[in-house]
Amino acid sequence: MACSPPQLLTAPSLLASTWRGYQRDFITTEGQVLNPLAFSGWFRSEHVPHMQTTSEGQAYALLRAVWVGDRMQFDRVWQWTREHLQVRPDHLLAWLWAPDENDIWRVASAGSASDADEDLALALIFAGHRWHNPEYLLQARAILDDIWRAEVVLNRGTYYLTAGDWAPGYWPGIVVNPSYLAPYAYRIFAKEDPGHPWAELADSSYRVLRSCTWALGATEGVGLPPNWCLIDRVNGHASPFASPEGDVYGYDAFRVMWRVAVDAVWYHSPAARRYLEDSDYLRRRWARQGWLAAEYHHDGTTAYKPWEDPSAYGCDIGNFVVTDPRAALTLMQEKLMASYHTESGLAYWGARWNYYQQNWAWFGVALASGELQNLAASS
Image (cartoon, rainbow, N blue to C red):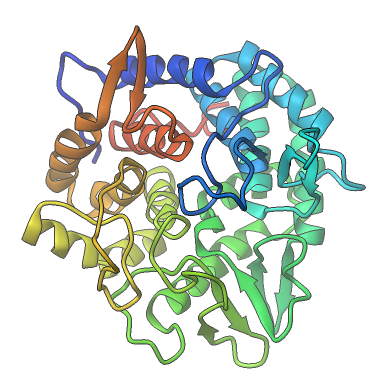
């Protein structure tokens, strides 16, 4: 059950106006999506370029463009992406394009990020169905073939989507980013690419999610997935991945709630609903205090002084949409709608120049208002 924003600001108008604002602030006329903040941590750092472009950002723009029906911008962003990031020997994307010490823009890291690759493939499939163009579908299938070859691994009878092309061979375990797992997309991929067992990957993704969420090594959890997870190759058990804030429910992990909710809404997946119902920590915190922190430790505690973030609410709301629609409506109105602003005729969410907030508040509002369509389902 979806919730609705106040009548004077309808969801379609909000999504359209903030998409226009995003194009003006973040997308160049050539189709490059610029991120003016640090890639992780969301603050300026001397160790991170002042401006950068990621495969994630390009894929987000393509998904938003096809969902709002903006084919001109879709083609512009896709052309830039093909020319600058789809430059590996395969069809996957180099994840980072940034200026070097001489301020010359180039591929700064050619490794792949599997979430961007799957979001890109999904956007192309949607474009092929929405605009009845088989070329998009051919391009998507080429990407899907390479995702399966380079980013999916079969270990002791279980398929895993790993974090990127570097992760399948990582030792001592398989590196998984739980927020990259997108079972709804795998159900679509199964129809477009029947040569690979995508449906099995959808099923195994829930086993991985449950293991990383509730059985993360010796740490007692409260039902929140971590940013990163390491799967033991012998027994399949999950443990924290040795990275900064790897076991934190934070700026990677909260996307899990949105992705699982999409599977529940589009496909009525019992595994999706069960996962969200069992993961009730956010709902309990919301009922008790009326707000949610952007990050939580695996045991549910917060570090330092907790803060709120529209991007976190945009993802967290997925849990509420499926399990508690009344609370989802309240969260939508009090947090996401309250973060909507206009300035000089431009509409945006939260902090105008925060790229992550602009994307995930948008995705959250689209999902919670029922405007997030499975464009591959009706054609």
